[in-house]
Image (cartoon, rainbow, N blue to C red; front, side, top):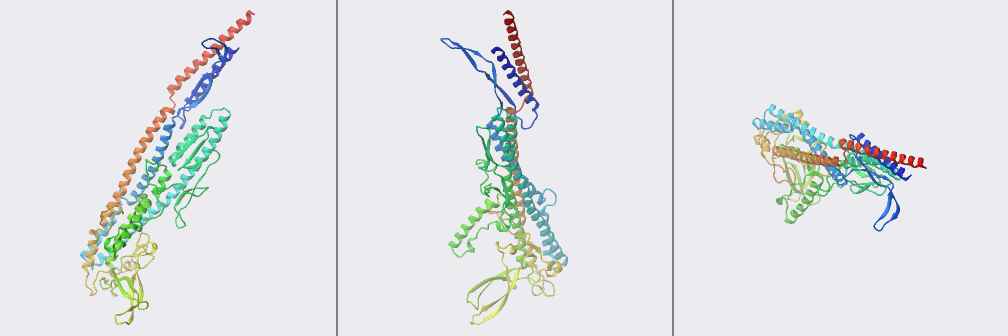
Length: 583
């Protein structure tokens, strides 16, 4: 009778193999499906004797050892690393593309036109400084220039803020994938502990790992029970029993920008101070790429360090201290500002506008330092005041002195202050000065920065107040020429890593070129990564994918094996009938 059981084992093994083959064919086009392979092995043997050389044994047929997935763990790991790197640079590339579109260089509404129009208006004014038409044209052009600049700046800030929605969305996706992996872990553990085949569940889990790897840098391992543990940025995310969720919170009380933290500890998930490097795998994950591109704060021209000039310091020691401070500021800039395409663009663009506004105002409303001894305290005081002696005046009846073209919305340019001045003969007198309100990086209201600048309302209502006349009522051609000459003067480097000082037009060209250069770099990396991911995925598919031709061949093979086992049972049955009938 054992011969019948041997035949039955062949039927069962062939049937299982046929089922696995049919399952492969059915799911040939199913995304994420990994072909399954039947592993058959000898059943137990019965020893009936022993010779000098070997045992005498009778086999009991064949048994199903496993229905295994055909995967290459090395290719899986390579794919998940490279798809994560692709996600990181895709976010960078998308941010650069958005920034490029805001400046309109490719859409025919380039900001460079606003710069050219302002320069042309000053050139026309230099020809006829006393022309009401030329003055009005300059003021109107200044309004258009500022509106266009403000529009770009506002859109940059809006885009930066809107990226918070993408951050929240990606955090939600990561948490959802964590829940799915945790649930699949439970299902796989339950199924395999009962001796069932959980390969389809494993396919679903591997698809979740593929998707998660695109969002964040992950590591994972499977224990002996078939449960996968997953870590994000080196911190446990999915364990055998729970999921440690990600959450978002604002960076500070004064900012709407979000940072990603671990919900249970409040620790930040990503170390954004790291320099992105493929060698160290610190450039992986679309969520991290999004945070880096967005930046951690808004930015303006004060975030760009200015190299100290030795002649501005009384001693060499003071100069060396200033250089040390500057070096630290450059390090901070490179770490937090330059690494973010949005923050870098905000700071550099604001520096251009501040440079233009400051240069024009300094000509129309010049300042000078005044030093005197305070009559009350005896202390020497130095203040910056309106230089009324060298300032031009308007053509209006009041001959308004030194009216600036651009004003701060939150602070006047000058504040009238009265001081008790000690004279040489020992007496004192009260003197009133128009004291310049210095720009203070700690007080945004004092800055000539986008969002805090407008064209002087007095000039909008009366262009004759534009300071282009001398105190004697003559036309001040020198001031008009100085305004035109501004466009030939160098005013700043693009960033502290550059040594080339640029004119206004050169600066904007360099800014546009840097943005385009970053875009080209990121696009090249993205194309390279896409090709690499496609290549690795192709190799994976060659291992895991279902070949219908191969499966049809297996179908025929296992069908023949089933038929052979069936014929074997028939022969044994006939033999038993013959034996029984002979008895």
